[in-house]
Image (tube, rainbow, N blue to C red; front, side, top):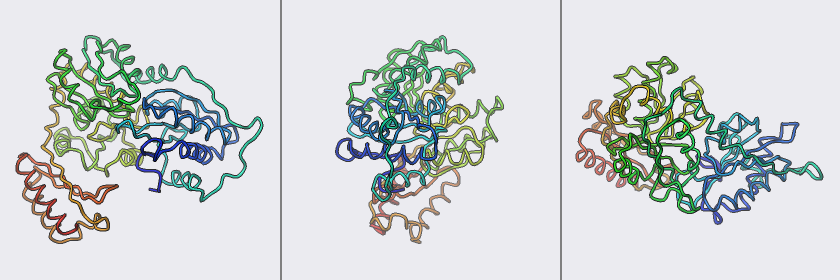
Length: 449
């Protein structure tokens, strides 16, 4: 990736790293690159989550977009996947989201969707970056009547909710569902959709104030939802993250149902219904070993990609698969949307519970989640990709894999941003795998640190 764009757009602490000036330049360069081949005035949507810095960045971004002649359509506070969907529905040339997803409120970010609702390729991001950094120049800026302008839209939330509801073929009457909106972008859409489907909905963390997004709530902090589900006797709980592109669930006993389990439940139902394309569910190398064991029992093929939803999506598009995702709850149902969609994922999962009559705990038991331990080894930056070149490290990994004999797993990978090598071990005995992960991380640190 380039200097500005990370794995999910341009990110940083708002007003120091991600400044209004950078937002202006990003809007100007993004609109120019994405629409320079269109003969009509480009139409670009902007959505944002509930962070206080969103207004500042939206104003700067809008100015940048208008400076190259774009018609800007602000959607207000709305989930990231809604922008992907509405870009297609409204026949826009691009969509922009101002959000830092599951991160704390001081962070913010800017990411683009192309006219088909997909995140941008590395090549397009690099081209945009070259204009932001001044390596390339935008030549003829429009004047007079060709300068861009803002055109309001008041239907975005209802249009997205209607779309999400249309992805399921049953109502949810009789189900008591608790939702945790992370004080983020789902605070209106999730309640509306579930309510329209007839569920008895009880919501927590749905009063955003600009700074409480993701704070001790949402899919990264499930404790309050777990307690809430059991205290009100809900059938199931659903937690979203700040921009609502991911979801996790909680069963009626307060136990966490992670993304691997949600995917397995949905994929198995799709298999039985004949809608699971090529009998395949795409996961990443960080998915729990229990998912792959369950896949074998269900007769579902589960290829593994590198960590990151963009790699899952690439595999799905290349091979024609229609469900894939990550343990974190970022799940892509390509029959419905072009990116991870927390609300659509939740509705798919809830519809399976409704149609099968299974409790959430019964459905999730399809995957026996193996204990998983993650340890970090601090290494020299230049060594973080060279761990398997060392014979001692390679031999230790092979010895452990042989010992587990399919009932455990060793995964070592470098951090994307820090001088760390991450050691992840799965197995049945938590104490034993913790000991082995610590020993292996210490060894890597000693050799490569």
